[in-house]
Image 1 (cartoon, rainbow, N blue to C red):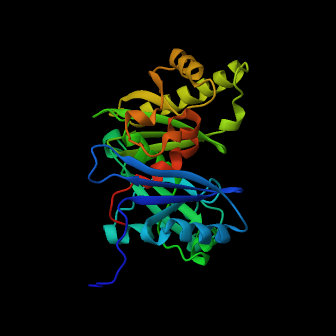
Image 2: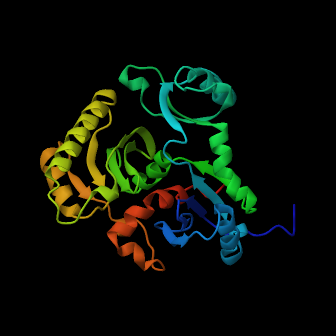
Image 3: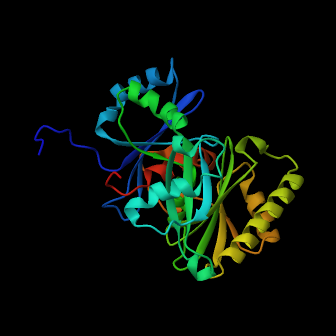
Length: 309
């Protein structure tokens, strides 16, 4: 026992690096009837990533937090594969072998992890997993600014799993949920049930593409077609999971988009509203729907279990 160890603040802090800013979110889950978002801020970069992180480490006492970050689109792949039939302790190495023909670089140089897909066996298939693979140099590059700033990262996550954490708050017991979240780089569609991720895919529409007051009929048509195809595919793959609704993150004229999609899809559609599932009395800017959309991924990443893994 180290009697002089620093006491960590409860909850998780997610730090995301962008071209011009660093985003932070601190969320407390344990001991609360609903998750409480204690911090959700963006800081303009001054100097390099490491320079800005050093400044924030000092100003915010980041050494007292359990810290995580998210890999960016293009830095990793999420691949659906058959689950290796090996003991749990050997699963990660076996998973590496399973994806050897699905990545375009030597699999020996990959960082690999994965999550099981529930219920695949009940659909007449063998057990399935979603494997996450990244080049080791990509992971090293993501971690380097934190190491240079003397910030310990206990977890490196991916957006699909962060969105799963968020979707869990909106699920109805025994039903599946489709969630579509937009940010400045695109849109991510996930299918979850019982707090587990079943499927995920990217859609090439970002927050930047929506113009308030513009005629978005063509864009809405294209989105409705892609979403219905995804819903149909999920239904064929997982007949035992009934999707109760599609939740979409706020965009300009979001009510109009939700109404359009609701009239053209086979499931009800509603806009995501964090106030329905979380508390953030100290972060009033999250009452702005578009600010919510910008922060959803890092909030989801901070919605982790208390113990580091």
